[in-house]
Image 1 (tube, rainbow, N blue to C red):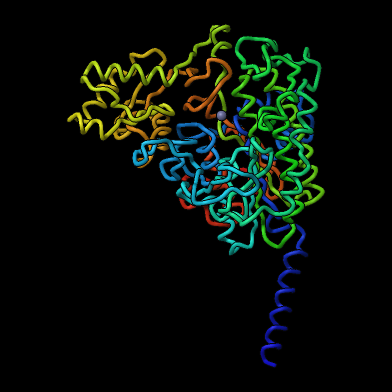
Image 2: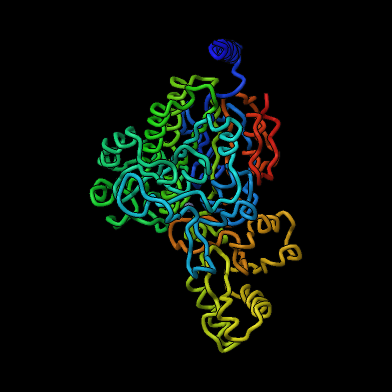
Length: 543
Ligand SMILES: [Zn+2]
């Protein structure tokens, strides 16, 4: 009897509590947080193509709080460290994600940032789902939301690229889903669940990639209207495998049957991502419960199109015009399902990109290409001539050199001496500006702001011995198309837009950093910041 009485009392107090929660005029917390990371989006794309954007996509988000001067505070500027930084508020020195992959001295081979053979693939055959976030050493803002709500909040990560879904969703996520190019399915890892939910299988059965690719890729507006970009036919771009020229119309339908992955190299990769995100919101009831949920989305196709064609291409411009429409459509879906004012969106990028080298050359701008294989060969020759020993370099990757410790020992060579020799030699190679000893960063003669990028990017267990810095607009590889990875502003300057619940509209021209995003979310949501967070809350946007 006493138990029944106590239970009744508890139910009455809980219902009073939930009424308090729902009857106040403005919600005290958002129902849903949506993080959108546009892969390889340079900040200037917000303005460069503005004449062709509508009012409901980027421009609607810009009516929120616009941090115009947001930079990445570390090198190297690649996808995995970018996503890890946005959501941990931390840098490779602490979160450990120093690249998409890195060299393991123990296994004497490269390891992938989210590869994990402890888990099985869900949704297809093969290894594409054998993944986890375990190599990320710090918590994410999504983890902290789970901790703060005693795991009542739902967190789901979605992106074409596995790393762009897994790292943002964090360690405690309910699920992360990514696209398998071989099967054309959205898949996952047994790290999260034992099987795919029925709604994911149903989505895969719709076979949307083929449907989209059957349309082929033509420009949305007349080709002559793309005055913001280079001529369609030029020598800076990579044609698709079936083409002799990199020009519209791209007959992607011809490739889709054998290779569904081709959708990731078209604007429809982003459309497909938002289609999947909408189904996730609907079927997982995101933003429909008492607790704040978090959906992380990354648009990966912008990166693949950018690498293929370069920032000054009609293809990149058309990709952003179509993404603008997809964004507008997604926001109106959020209005209908979660309700305007109940959700907060932030949009940023994992890195920018440099212009294609041929484009720079033809416009008398500095720049060039350094290929890793050639540089490795040159360094090896130098060491061989100097010491009479071959293969003293274990790996040259991501602008870092890992010396082979075993070979040095066998050859009775002092590592510090060899390092010093190589560091003096490297800047004699065309395109290499400087080489630095990663163990002695504090005393390296570089401007402090620039040096900090390397200090933040250096992880003692995972990084190499020597970092080489290329001259501005020099790229690792990519004789055509473009890439990223440096500490120069074309790679580090990213958009950062905030919109919706809790956001005071405004423009901010002060310097903010990628690491400030997680710190700001923690402040807005009144939850603990991620444990390795070094960012500061952006107070200008707080209501
Ligand atoms: Zn990239």
